[in-house]
Image 1 (cartoon, rainbow, N blue to C red):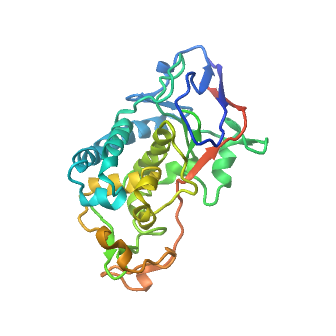
Image 2: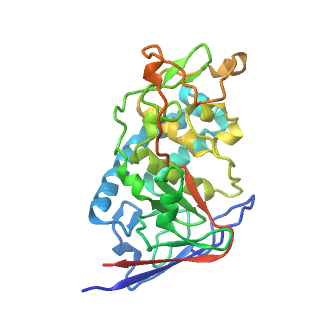
Length: 330
């Protein structure tokens, strides 16, 4: 039997300093069945994804749970005794409970939006195909979400749709490796420049080889969901990417930047032990241009050649009221 499902999502995104959890759900799915009928992994729902994509997500999300446990423990203890990793990425020990709580929320899929018949309020992943999902842009034009995925340069792997529970997974996402190629491959350090060094496998920023995979891309977008759900949250614009960009941020900005959480969790999970010297951060000149690679001890100049990489750094912002319409054959 064939039927058609219509999804209507009301987006009212304004760039305001204060953002609180709305009293009413951000979306209303007009369907004959309840949200519990969507495929799920724990509290996370998976919408409009094919069977292989659903199975993949049901593998990735439990793996992410396991990967976050070390970071949750590290942040818990950093309130009184900050670890080296915590000091590099967040600096101020008073923010440790916030970091720990956010990691725990991601691990558990804690709902931050009001539940409804169609949603439990937890993050909901959606895999838009051509013509299936439309977003109203800030200039009033309606754009196909699939084309937004394709038209970004480089093509986007994932986007958090603000303000909502939706996280779009673009086709590029499913072309990435599931996990880091080597889970114990930690960043190198340039002691001369007192910064993270870029290794030959880092085709973008230093450390990018650790996080350009499906598990940490998911985490990056989930951090957006939980950051935007915080009362009085102010979006860090522009976002900062890469290990060196993340560790240079001040304490207030570091807890507003998704990559700080990603690299903190990834390096703690990998049991990394080499860090820049935060206590003497300003005593050495920092090279601001990451397009010039630092050479680790085991590299030559030819090994550190430039390359391109697909990043999951897009967030869809809609600055006017509009609707998102989606149809799926089941």
